[in-house]
Length: 399
Image 1 (cartoon, rainbow, N blue to C red):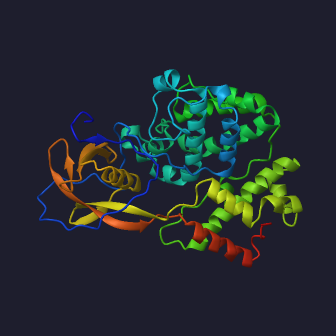
Image 2 (image 1 turned 180 degrees about the vertical axis):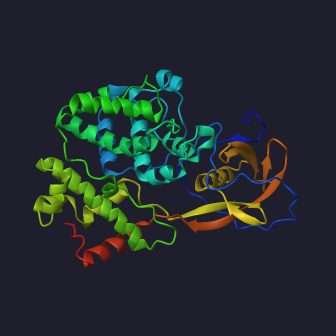
Image 3 (image 1 turned 90 degrees about the horizontal axis):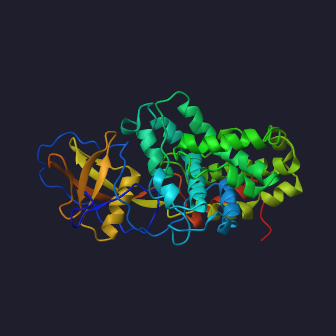
């Protein structure tokens, strides 16, 4: 559909951009139309378009991997496909990775993908129904945001999803003790199968070859270093508190490695330790939240489609794509929606969703600004930090 004049097809993306939402619009008398496929499992597909680069939220230990990699950018081929730094905007196919991308870009994108999976694991698991890609909203979500797909219809898929992110972090900790360049060379292979199974296989091979006895007992439980899925009704202090819980355990993890003790032992010894407090305080927490992209405009624009006599919201990613097209002045775009991936035109002139197969239409509208779950502004973060300092949960920084 990309060849149609004045029509754009857009990949799903977790990129964010400044948006000015239009006001909700009314609807005309709708005609009878087939059941809508728009719902919680909507995904987007198509040809990529140029978008402003945006910070992708990355937890502490993944940002450390990227920092070490960035210092070795030239050694791994530099950048060829991005103006400033790699970002995930679509799944890159195997032949593209082998012929058009550098090792630096491949490794960077892989780390970003694993970081996204770490932060969104529960949602992927909840949507994973164990079926092939076309009928599996969990795998569709994974591919859209991490740039990787997987064979979720095979045994052990959920166990692989849980193990992958922390296995990469554990491998990196081994690499820091041995040789970081060696880690990047051995734990990543641009010529390998780019699916999640193919990428994690190289990491597991590195762990087996280089990690015997090195990190035994250091890795924390997944729940300790993962954000909870807080709903839209969550208070700001609940959101900041959950980030603080994860940051505390991340600092404990790092401190346990430095002290050469188990993570469990470190949780018992960290309180009052001066070295630990230097890494875990109000200043370092605020800096980490800013550095990893956790502080953003908490409001986003929501688009809705009229179906079955009521307005039904598009998935956040698709709302972002529609709003992005509107901001660019594009009259229409094509999205693939629903578990079957049916194609629809979103006509921003006629304000309808049009089925490309039979031409039926449904009214659409911008529902205005809504608060995105789990997101806080800088001012809200600072107020939350002050709240936890007053509770003596967090010590004041040195500034």
